[in-house]
Amino acid sequence: MGVTGQLVFSNYGTLVCATLVLLLGRKLVEWIGPLRTYSIPEPVAAGLLVAFATLALRQFGHFELKFDTSLQTPLMLAFFATIGLSANLASLRAGGRTLALFLAVVVGMLVMQNTIGVGLAMLLGLPPGVGLLGGSITLAGGHGTGAAWGHVMTERYGVQSAAEIAMACATFGLVLGGLLGGPVARYLVGRLGRHGAHVPGADTSTSAPAPEGFEQPHTVRLITAQALIETVAMIAICLLGGEVIAAWLSGTAFELPTFVCVLFTGVIVRNALSLVGYEVFDRSLSVLGNVSLSLFLAMALMALRLWDLSTLAVPMIVILTVQVVAMAAYAIFVTFRVMGRNYDAAVLAAGHCGFGLGATPTAIANMQAVTERFGPSHIAFLIVPMVGAFFIDIVNAIVIKGFLSLPIF
Image 1 (cartoon, rainbow, N blue to C red):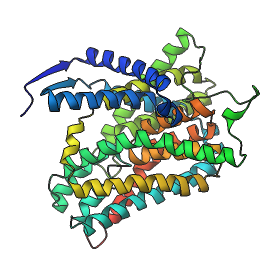
Image 2 (tube, rainbow, N blue to C red):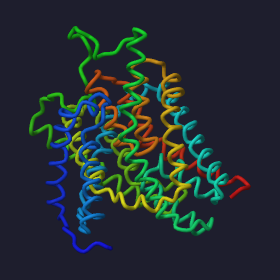
Image 3 (cartoon, helix red, strand yellow):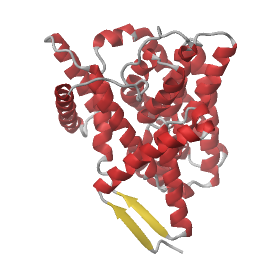
């Protein structure tokens, strides 16, 4: 029996629901010990609860809730604008070696995902293109990359229903990416504690460094109305500049997603202002960035069409399950070890799970949940946004095209 009725929320109604989801998420994490213990992000906890409630209402009550997600994209772009505006070249130079090392780790993950996807697809009798859709195209690339490559897979490689498979895989990855990072970080931080390694949250003194940027979003940050207006103006410039650059690059060999162009514009604006002596007020950037991130994640997760996952046949579920296990193992045995086997490496591993299976906003939320509990990690919040939001799209496209050049395609 199909859906017999529906309730459609306007964009304002959806915004109200998103704010209520965030408030509910805070209470859920306070009330439910395992959510707090395993550092599950608040938007993920409550957003998934609403998504499952919507699924149950649709399946058993034959009634559907529909959300207007038109605000979702502007919120996402505003978040990436704040990432770009936070990236001054002096900081990036300070993290240069670590950034390059983490990027190498990420490339290894992309190769691993596609090797697993293609290998299992062929073993299960599926076209190798399906394996790529269950690999880095959707897991590291997300819904946008999945949609773009889905059409390519159908038109050039004959993969049937590729767009639907891509959307379902990306949804699966977004859910698991938000759930996996916290437990992985909890396990790694526990190992550090048992071996006597330094964990900021274990300090009994008040000398631990103060949180910066997107770290510990519940920390009070004093700002003024004037600073907020200036920050809004800079974000608006980034959105406009990113839109113009994306339009210029559209259809060329250098085409990039709009959010990457917005982030790049933010980097240019931040450092151009620094050259003329204007200091960007990072605290207002932090507040607006965290608000945009939280609302975006709440909308994205509460509006998930979980019933679309029913399009995943058993072979695809096998592929994706193996991918999740492989991502957890890679974060623990490769990311954590290569990045230094310390607290920063544990936070990086949590972020890696976020954008390795879902998206950069999920990675930031994972790391926030960890640092809120255990203490700040400045280097993780410097490295992960830049790699997860900018470099990964470029290297992922190169890796995907490298796999497509193999004789099996």
